[in-house]
Image (cartoon, rainbow, N blue to C red):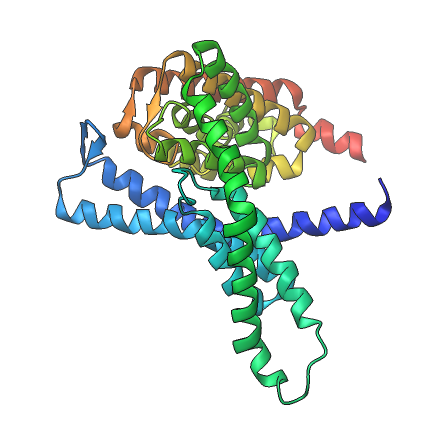
Length: 353
């Protein structure tokens, strides 16, 4: 692959990471509010039914957070490419991608939003490069560029891109709805590895979005194993620091306490400090632990009715004993594996000296 192509792919990755980083607060607000509100409800025919007025308001706030995250993702991908004029057309593209398309009941969702965000960014960047008369320049960024680029993005999506993307999403959704128990285990392994791979990065978010899309279709048994996989990296690293203190620096021992707290509320990013410091030992360990925990959840037919993970969503989980078992086993596997790979801090320093 040529150096030019590699450079462009690296730029695209940076644009995606910008979109993801702006989207994460919306995901956290949506996930925590929805999980908290559903925890007050009771199981019903359509999942958890919330009867408290206050809890319903909190649920609506959470739903708003999750509704906004797709347009935010697309908008800030475009922003990364083209600056402020890219935000509105990108968000409009993301909004359209998150709506049912024509006669299809499916949405393009997360994948469609990425495509539309990149498309909007390149369109705006192209228009910004036009040579225009001096009297038009003041109105270009606030009038001409937003309207023209939004129309190009929206109409291109509606007439060219929307239906094919929705068909792919529909095929995936239909396939997962009919998966056998063996298929559920395979899906659990794949999504478990993805969740722990980059801890909140695009691979992690792809697995989450996949499960969120299925939840919208009434399928909760993919989110169950993912809910387990989400919390085992920070819990596992926190436990590892408690079991073998001599293998971790003082800073890592402090980070271990924070990781345990973040794991309890399903914040996978709590393991990032450990992975950043020692990726070759930590990443394989947390990925293995998440996959093992997710498989236990799949075998136990665990279903998570909240688009979030960790012990905090236990009240809205079906088959909670398997959910707890998956978290415990995944956490222990992570801790024992990473500690078996690590050496004492003093020996590590001596080796590097």
